[in-house]
Length: 216
Image (cartoon, rainbow, N blue to C red; front, side, top):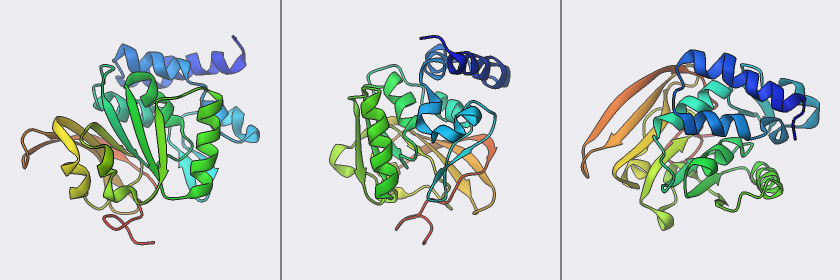
């Protein structure tokens, strides 16, 4: 159904994503399709497609659309991958990933946030997303190895637990730095112990809390 939010979503893609270099047609199509506003409280729907993060409660945010797009594009998804998401948050990033990969496993440490995300994802009929409550810095070994891992919170370093759960050739995208500024960093696993690193520029995320991240 075409409505004002469909129009805002198209505008978001045309003015915020494509001009900044998002090129993967599958990522662009997913960003055009997923109703971002439904992952927010209704009072915040007017802000859903603006060029900034939006609060979702519990001191958490839904990331700026461009950040969601660039992190997703960095994984170079073709459709058959198994992905781990660390930090379910609103559930929006998981929905984008579910459009592009075969299976998404997502870990959230805050039960109230996870429950809300699951409800929205169920309403939108995403059956290829599994959510658990836990310490995302430890990964989810049971379902590893993963073709891609996306970390939606800032860490002082890339947890070895996550790197170990990547397939050879797998990709980990994570914001690295202090609690105020970070560098969006991509790790590509070349061999069991060797990784290629690429920088995707500055960003700012909430802290990754856990055994291998920040302490509360």
